[in-house]
Structures are given as C-alpha cells and as structure tokens.
Image (cartoon, rainbow, N blue to C red; front, side):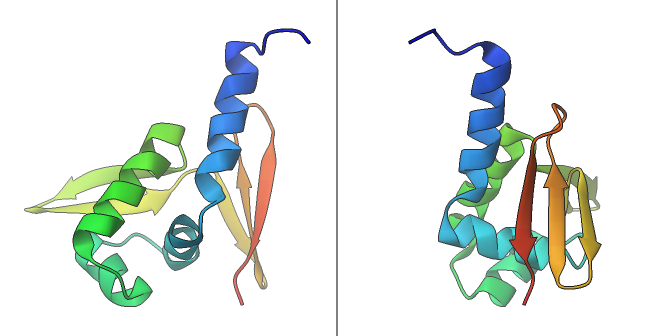
Length: 102
C-alpha cells in the first residue's frame, strides 16, 4: 500500500476532527455564528476545559478560527455554509463534510 501524502493526511485529519460527538456538537453550535468558550460550554452542556480541548483539535485541523475580542476569544467555522437543515464544510482540497443541524 502506498504511503499517504501530506495532502491526504491533512484531509484525513480534517475529516477525523469532525468525527467525535462533542466536536460535532461544537460544530453545530458554531453554525449559528461565532461564540466564546463560555457560550459553547453552556450550549453544549459540557465543561469549559472540555470545550477548549476540542476547539484546539478543531483549530489544528483548520475547521475553526479564533479571533480575540477584548479578553475573550471568538471561535467561528472555516469553509462552512448552512443551507436549510444542513451545514456543509469544505476543506481547502475540496473534501466536504455535511452535518445535519436538526
């Protein structure tokens, strides 16, 4: 079997980042717009430290960005578009993940 290229590894890491229940909940929450860790923890009913951990994974994969707003960080999705009850996320390579919002 051939060795995966860095482009394939990037795609695989990006897809894998979405494949965990807490991270899926965070993605769904962020589909409505940018939010702080506190807002996400409340909405996803989980501890802030847990939210921070999963946001770090999503950020490393390139699925979310963080922007400083005063003393808070605002997180938002990258390459995402909500249409009806679906959220379509697109990797820079063109790979897509579709997440139901309902």
